[in-house]
Length: 72
Image (cartoon, rainbow, N blue to C red; front, side, top):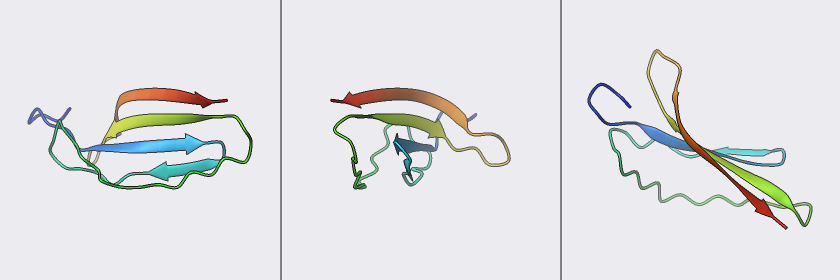
């Protein structure tokens, strides 16, 4: 979280070797990305790793949270 009490969140997605990153939504605690990504599964199973970050200028981005979803 930034000194103003808000964050500049973005999301990283990973499914196997595929990596995606959302746009950054500035100065909010309730982001709405309204983006669509096409993920392609080569196998019948896999793990979708989703992590949320706060973008910081001139510093390392702050980790907000992570979730992993297994597909069987």
